[in-house]
Image (cartoon, rainbow, N blue to C red; front, side):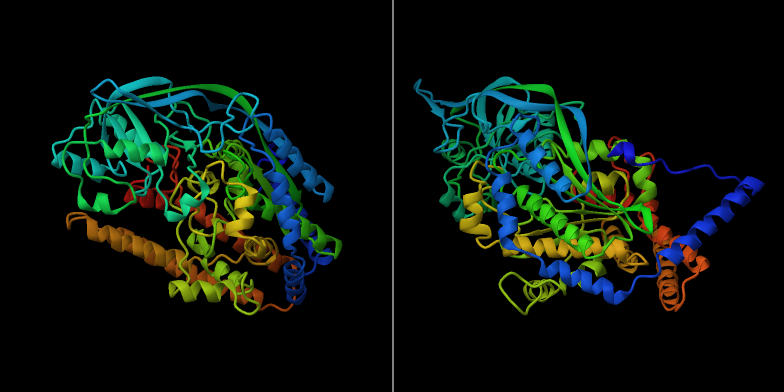
Length: 631
């Protein structure tokens, strides 16, 4: 795909030369030609195409896509993953779309051996299983990879165990108050607390821990699916790794046994009340634990797959719709519920095209590889095409896990808030013929609670935090008990999360309408008034944590200036849309306004990035991440 993105022209002169004058006249002629041959779109036609899309949904089609995609494990860089690559590419090609695969040679991490044992003072040794119950075949002939954490270093750690709750800085401070030092010990951490695996491992490493054992503890419903072992990556950062992370493995039953034998001070009451484990004390010891892990890091080829629908009037403006394809195991929820929805949107777009529809702007379907290892596929591609995306990308619409369970959730940059609300008012909830997603959303939450994309946990990260492109992330269900385990299979989906696949249809409906509006509206539906209000919230948060010696007056003035500019742009939008006739001058004015709306997010980028984390360049996102302690 990258070779088809042309570089923007960045050559500008202060004086208009005869050549420039000629070029300008040519542009006017071209614009006038396009205006004559591509007259303004009829809003009624746009609504008809949106209705046609929604009415062409079939849960059977989505389920058939998902069944095939999850018929076998397909971890990135392994031979079985090639089949899913071929399936997605062939699907796009059969629909008649311009389709490309873009390979990257990148460093990935795979397990060779892992063991965990408890050593008692009387000489007894008890080996703890690290495989999932009922899944014994983890040899090289199996496509199901044994449970592990990618980019953990090979080695052996022998020592007593200290329980550090979620492993946050606050949790380690609590241990210090109990006069417990984790240095020289193996740290056991319960997943949660708002930090990713890599972050808590980095904290433990700085504290001098010998190793980290991490376990996941869900609700009681997890017991219905055996003792799944959650895989993941402990690499801190995104993209192709230059240095590895450092951590261990996790298993609920093994963790329970170790916790029962801990001595030392009593654990704080909130630590004991926050889970189902029989936790009493924090350690260290007295039982010794021997943890061994051997893995290999090797170069592997990953493949991003792209399908392009060229825009009729503005082919050089891109609306990108993306989902990653790779999975730790079968990946029915994570990520192929999203992949199935993306494939169905592509099918229905092809149907619209047969009915005479073509988007105003170019739509690019993106099927990413190696997201589970740290958003590698999307990050490498964004970095490769940074200049072109910076000049031409309207928005990136991400769906990772389309369906995890009940309840609709959305995260977005603020200028997309109103568009999300408008779209969710048009899509019916799966269990109702009358109520919309917006109705159910506001009934449950009291308001439509659109979250902010502060994390680095899906493929929107590079688009937003590195390239400054407006982004959306949507999904059904907050969490699911088979996350990253071998139980994340088709049978779990049909028995639990979405038996009739209507939630898949609902997510596809929202995702599609967002894409159609951004690709077809004459003036981009981006409203920065929500952004100004969000910045005011951040400013108020800062004022509460900073002392009086630091003035926030310049920041307040900047937010006020932005608010005034937004109101001016909104008035300009109304005036331009009220014009009954289109000429080349109006077309140029709309184009100029759209460019300002599209590029405004880029204005929050800092070229140098945050010190020590230079890849993160979005100042607003940096503030949120630092405030939440996520990097």
